[in-house]
Length: 240
Image (cartoon, rainbow, N blue to C red):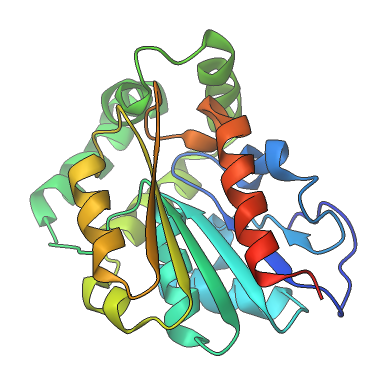
């Protein structure tokens, strides 16, 4: 697990859960928001499912009150954290996350086959490179590719398995008592603005943030926009 700094028991905890095919280092641009109480675990080795990942992440966080921020499959993991410990999660921030899951065994199998038969580079080109906005900076795309290149084929396959076997949690959003902030890049196609809008509207304390000229990987494409959103969430819930 990666700590940005040693945590403090007295403060609100900030738990970041990363997207496929990246790792906890994708949150480097958010490290100064709550530097003494910030966690950025890399999820692949924490178990075979998003439920396993959530349970492990919760065990690593010392603070009793949490803001949980997840991108893509990390957002699915964030939902599992909130479902497992709703009394601890003051706020959820879901970035490029689709709460509803309709399993597609054919798509799942084809993704694993592509990695096995053609390798990780082919998978990057097929699945993840297209998720960036066409207006994304080369620096953002290159940073993501550098993180991706550090991952093993086994870890990526484990992440794909967790993504495709995750529970459907769309009904949970209406029951969640904390605040929900749904963030979508304007150019995101997975799940996109329409789905994100509906998810935000389904929650009793839901808000929607659309990031202009941005795709799926908001923390890398538009970190300054995301940080403003997160500062507002932190301010709303306090740090002690």
